[in-house]
Image (cartoon, rainbow, N blue to C red):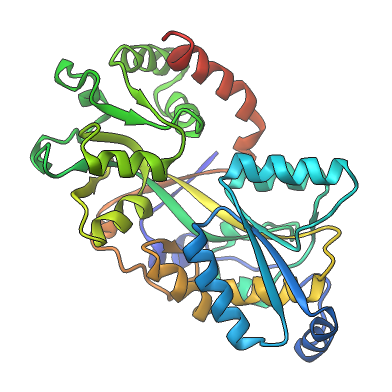
Length: 338
């Protein structure tokens, strides 16, 4: 199952529903007083260091009695760190924010605490876990980024079939560590047709580098003219800094989301609740929007122009069940053939 949406201010009409009452509910004053005694917060995140630090600075300005610390890594490395720590009996993180795949595994391993923030009522129902383990902070539409000095906007592929044009052979960048789009395409096309398409795409000699930040910077430097499945915020960030990067989107737009949750054995659980509340609040979501990201809170618009034109398809959270299978198939078709 997948959720199809137009844009966030329409989600209220499409996905409106009744939210579960707050789990572990306590009065706000009681949480603040308990957090004062804890005095610290440990935040694990896949946001960029600069963005995460800006969020933590704003949080500390509101709660100056807390000393926040951060560990930043991309999703797969972040999950590996957490699993390594917990297997050694160490539960270091209070709050974790990463892609839905990592959050799903943490929930399945009973490493997240049930907590429904009072701010959750301002999010579409599909972005709040009905069991209370997580809420989505922002979404990550996948787009095609391009180097504006190497290719005209009118030449950029607007359909996936256009990437098979021989003129793009050896000129398309792609991240080999993220098979979710691959799995989504198989669902969209049907497995037989989808696998046939992927084999043709693999024959285009894609340029593989791990990490979309690295890939987008290589795109800007002229290493290749096209980047398939870039995150919108990554392309938009370099564009806003004056880099020769812009983006187009294939419709419908494949979209991931980033949940936030509290560690099941958090050392600072009350500080963690305050932080989750802050990130999901109007103030926190406006900070998210300032990063060229798409916030999930209703009433906080993104500042990226043109998104209202597209249909967004958000994969269900449970799609992570097939991650390993899809990863192996992706590797077989695209990587091991080389």
